[in-house]
Image 1 (cartoon, rainbow, N blue to C red):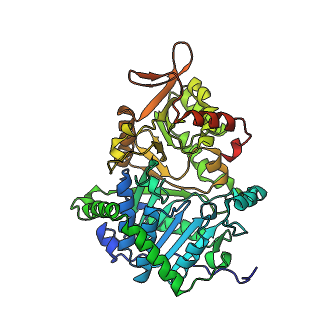
Image 2: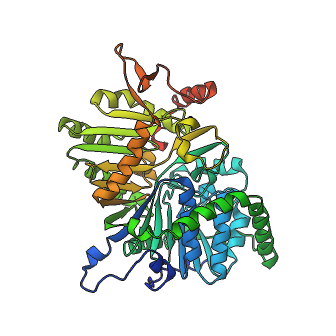
Length: 495
């Protein structure tokens, strides 16, 4: 190794309650009499359903940050939204804001020179979680190393977190990429984020620091041999500006959305003041599986008394989850599961895992709803006249008894339970739970989902009101073939 010295550690800055973001959201320092445990859970929340607002809020937090920005993402694409947010991070660094960016290496193929160049700014630092040892830019060689070191490299940081000034944060299902913000021309995601303000953000910062300072996270300078100069940085800025200039119409529209809610006189009153519990996996998750977020979710499920509504983009139930479902159903609890159909899922392989359990779930008494892929069933997610090929569910949320809700990054599948690190929030609040519940139940009522059930002959059907399909919805004949082939492979534990 070229570098022998330990990596320098750094930690979240103390929040300044006179900062612009504190004034924007009316965030005040906790009272001296407030107990520590309670103070760490105090928060103001805003559910973010619309894709354009999700991008606009991220821009707003970055633009208004005065001291620090910490960003932790599973995937950050070099498309319109990804480049725009990178340009905003550079602008923040230029005005003296400390920027720490933590990414997963498996989605950073071909980005080494850009990462190294971004890392050159004195106020920017980029670290890579669970990096490939060889910095090949070829997908072929990366795949070879992945297969050779599958046990190590299959451990991925699935967290999605943006923190500004240790006062505000955005957590939820969205990565950084055009499909999450209704800008992709092929498909877009239906997702859910939470804007979090207040003292609870400090626990998010604590989780970020654990990952940032973990031995699994390596500095870009330690990993990447390329050493950029000033000219490289200027060229990167020129390239960014040229690309963004071509997207000015989109940027101006998102700017308009952002300015609209920043000037909203009712913004502060729309924030929901409550207490939250933040739960996250440790960076070395496999060494402490009993403390995982998945285990916590399973225990919470068993406390449900009336109704459990699961919203999971990827749904492959474990044996422990099936056992908890059976216990709840025997106790008279209604269970609804909202997940992707074959037509709507973006990763066909994952669907094969869910499909194996579909009849078992129905036989148990679970109500199954599968997302409809056709754009005409989701008009609220289009901000431009052009329609994409399909839509996909990407949200990860669980609603307990109409008074509590989980929102985070964890899907109910083996990868999230055993391989990925995840983060999420539990909120016991009637108002927020009702907002999340109504948004997804409105989707059901408006025809955004098929209900999967048996007909009189015992065959599966997909139904919405009087509309019935007897053949599983799919995007194409070739997707059906691909699904059939993949279902024969022994890859269940990796899905």
